[in-house]
Length: 287
Ligand code: NAP
Image 1: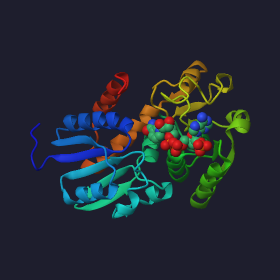
Image 2: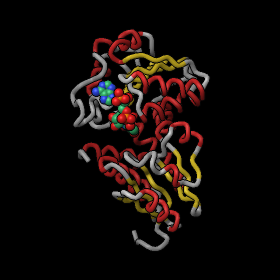
Image 3: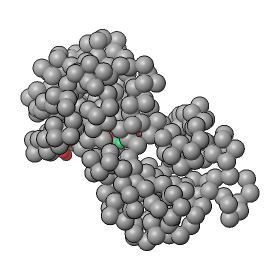
């Protein structure tokens, strides 16, 4: 590709772990779509200056925002989508002629991951493990757009679980129940269809090799979605496969939220296969 003043720029700012997978997916997408675009990673400390720079560069089309900047960018944007306001953070910035629009793609990406796996959410009983930022994004998307029968959130810090549940009850009409991961897991697993693992347990470098769900509690009727994507096949997913459950890996969420970013920045359909292949390769290479 030839770099010119017209070359579209997209980038990621935030935690270095996020850097290696997003450039792989987005640069593969730009190549496959024949776009003169490039996606880079920047270590940024002054978020406001970074966004002002973006405003001043018309070819700087899109920004992925990861930890620790997801909330810090919000006051510096010209517009924040209603979903990002509800979720309380932004992971995507789109430059529309110098106006910076903040949005969040994690929830919508997860809905697409479920649709791609042909797993129905409507009328289902959904159990979330964890009550952090990723669970908040996905729970809001499901409560507002997927019409489940009910949602239950189990966490280890009661105040955080309560706050998320109260917010969801205020903004959505789906019944929301809460509980404690340590005490209510067994009973909740028996009464729910879709289990969404949203804690870092099982993640590379963080309780690696552990599962938050004992394998003997899994039933073939369960659908198990583990948000952890490194390793790709987490201990929970391994147990779920053994128990005969349908599974959705965290990498599907990562892929589909990036697909939405591509579409938002370029107004083009995403080259999904190229993005999936690039993500597979990057994960297999341990990036
Ligand atoms: P977060 O905001 O820090 O929330 C983490 C949640 O897990 C909190 O509820 C926390 O409880 C709980 N938790 C942490 N360690 C625990 C443990 N040992 N036992 C039980 N609960 C524990 O993090 P996040 O951004 O939501 O991310 C959560 C996971 O999702 C991470 O593994 C992340 O990599 C993954 N993720 C994946 C994608 C994707 O695209 N696939 C996107 C975003 C996040 P406390 O509040 O009590 O600390």
